[in-house]
Amino acid sequence: MSRCLSDRSIDHVVIERGEVANSWRTERWDSLRLLTPNWQSRLPGYGYQGEDPDGFRDMPEVIAFIDRYAEVIDAPLQINTNVTSVKQGEGGYTVSTDQGDWACRCVVLATGACNIASVPAIAEGVPADIAVLTPMDYRNPDQLGPGGVMVVGASATGTQLADEIHRSGRPVTLAVGEHVRVPRTYRGRDIKWWMDEAGVMDERYDEVDDIVRARGVPSLQLTGSQERITLDLNALTDKGVRIIGRLAGMSDGKAQFSGSLRNQCKLADLKMNRLLNTIDEWAEEAGLDGEVAPSHRFDDTRVEKDPPLSLDLNRGEIRTILWATGFRPDFSYLDVPVLDRKGRVRHDGGVTAAPGLYLMGMQFLRRRKSALIDGAGDDARDLSDHLAAYLANPAKRTAS
Image (cartoon, rainbow, N blue to C red; front, side, top):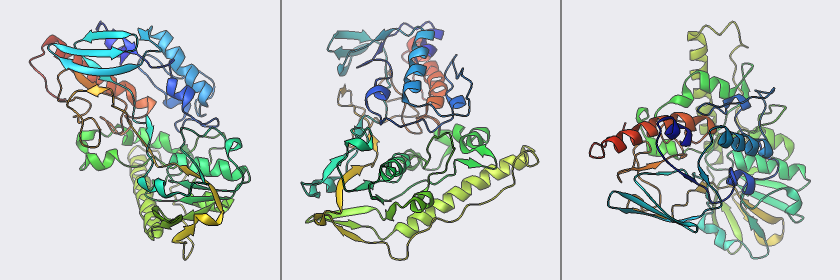
């Protein structure tokens, strides 16, 4: 957004609570790599410049990439500055920080969708002698005590951490709810290449039937690795991870699991095959069938005949629970009446009902790729156009 505002000669400041790329520096586990290939980190006026476009950046590389971008665009940074409130007033906003106040006509909320780990209320029933943590606390298996680990949640974070912890020698149980299964590679190309080329990632928020539902879809079961492995439930089962249903309740230290595991897996298989059908159709229309590997389908997700529906945590089999149950944004600093009852900003493609207040970096904000590094540029171009038009004529304000 800063680059797009500079292109329009709009005076602005970028306020950051820590250093540049603060979340990547302080809230990620050690082995994490981006789920998107290096070539897909495309920002306005900047992109990947290394010799491994099909690789996946680790955290130091991600930090260096964002650091370098801030330098290249000469972003007007105000780092180590914590915003305490954003209030609306006549003619604009007051942004209060621990370093003083800012007066401005517009505000762009780019604090992201993953500020706070979402932990379900049933966590309160976990026995006191079981260690609990979230992916924001977790760094590597060495910080875990001995004994079994239950990972709750089977999206990208849950599957990656289940795999890593299992490889450390600890027994791992993975509680699986709704999830999105995709292969890392398909017909000889990365799945992200197919989704990008076929236009899947560019689908707009006003082109889907249920945008609320689309914004709540879990992240893809993907991992970035040199081996380009597919890390789905079948792969985890083959490694020895125990797969059980969604954690549905907790009573007297006993965990209860949903009996819907088989149905959830069938639904994930169905949706994966729909995506592969879309890719196959596009490949045929684009004349690529002769240039790539033949179309094929993957084995259905294997589920044991009678997955357990309960587990007595008092028995000592599980010594740690890792809540990979998603994240939520933190708008506690926002004193503008644009929040819904769940604390989320109401918006139309990033344009809020408060004149001059914009939102970025959320799931499916304007496009399916909005929450990715690769999606920030297109959203910023759209929203900076709207912002510039608002500054030129505050009385005329329409979403577009």
